[in-house]
Length: 261
Image 1 (cartoon, rainbow, N blue to C red):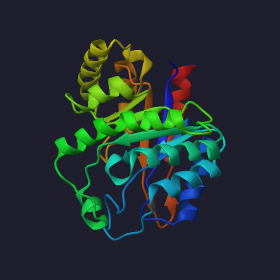
Image 2: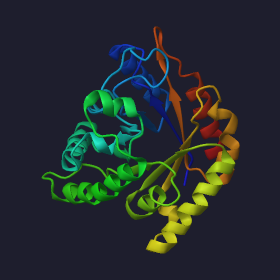
Image 3: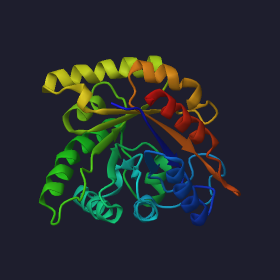
């Protein structure tokens, strides 16, 4: 599998026009995937700063681009009815011309829940809800008319060893996690065990990876993660008064091209 590079354009501390410009620039640079995220408030910086909702943002991202795959890294399962979530992504897949990824996770940012009136509960409860809803999402996708225009792969974000990685083995075509190469190797080995239990080849699942740190540089870990078996690196880029600095994305894309020959 050829190495790929994507970018998550953080929908905060910027204007919508600057965010749209960053999507267009990222695609022109050659990014394979472009993502937003699913929160209602900034995750860092001024907590009351500018921020935009994800599904409307994803639809605009789909319309503003023409080549890169697009998605949310990741949608919070708690915020929406699973059938609606499937339908919205199917519609956005048609807007994108068949380039949409359905990225999903169990949710974790308590402020989102508290301020928008969702029950936060426990991590175990949120994971049980994700396990319940993934089959509903897949079933609804199969019943929609028209269906998705493209493959619309399911990407599951998270690396919990008992539940999340089992759900990846059962449902996902893509898996995303965070950490250095040692963390990746340990999590990938656990995922392979879950795949073996359900009779699935782990190589069928694209392994995408990033860093949780906002100060560490993904490019500095790229070689180690590639050798360890990661298929795609996704760099997060934050907004500001002057828009987005895509310099690390440029470095990663040059690195990707060299690795792929």
